[in-house]
Picture 1 (cartoon, rainbow, N blue to C red):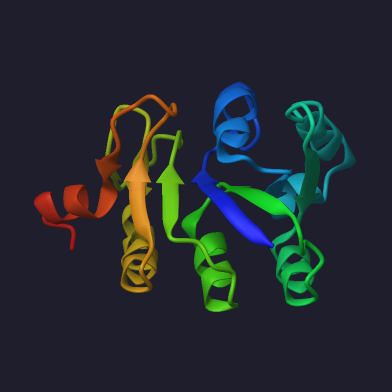
Picture 2: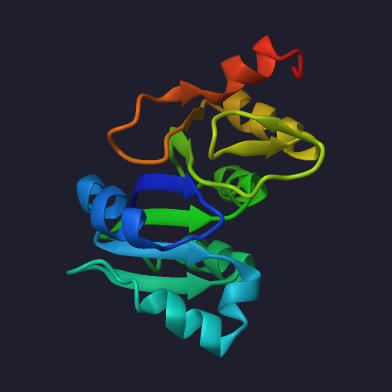
Length: 163
């Protein structure tokens, strides 16, 4: 299994991801890791409607994702992973799932957060998670579309005195 893309996005699998991010990554599977979505048949079915052409879609909980990776369920696949929060990616990385880049896409506007771009905010309580990912060798960039100039998330947090 090869992780060909990772993205934090509050909408998870939607148009820009299905038509640009996932296809340009060369993925054969898009994996949505979100406990709430995976636990709701309606949300899960709605998410699968956004399936990019020619790709499998998994909508699973964090626990299922970790178990599936541990048991090599995705061997011989190229996986693009989507989640709403950075803690999912930290759990994956700590459990041996290798990826070197994390894209911060669109997020909600949170109270007590740091504005990275017009579309991306980092909750202050998540800054240690981003810092730990960076210490593990993960480059964290903010880009909404594949054509955007990447913004170095850790540099913005440092510039704003948050780390």
